[in-house]
Length: 89
Image (cartoon, rainbow, N blue to C red):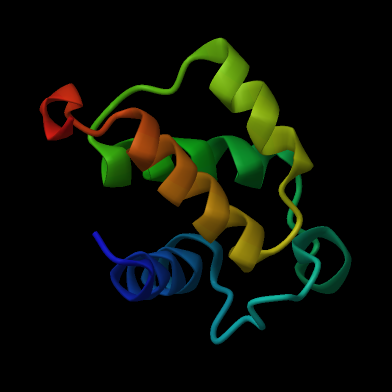
């Protein structure tokens, strides 16, 4: 998936799951949209579906630093890279 495809998918998730329409990609989710820890847990489940893979405990801990949608995009792309087939070498 490209960054644009992931962005579109995340914006749909934010609209459908969290009733946040057209969030700014650099808006602090906690401050601007009152995004809380329960929302974060639900978002991690959605990220697992995007990745088609379960996140490890350490990967979930890394997600605690996420504040913006751009942070989420960087995170998803990093997790996807870790899961890329090793046969690319």
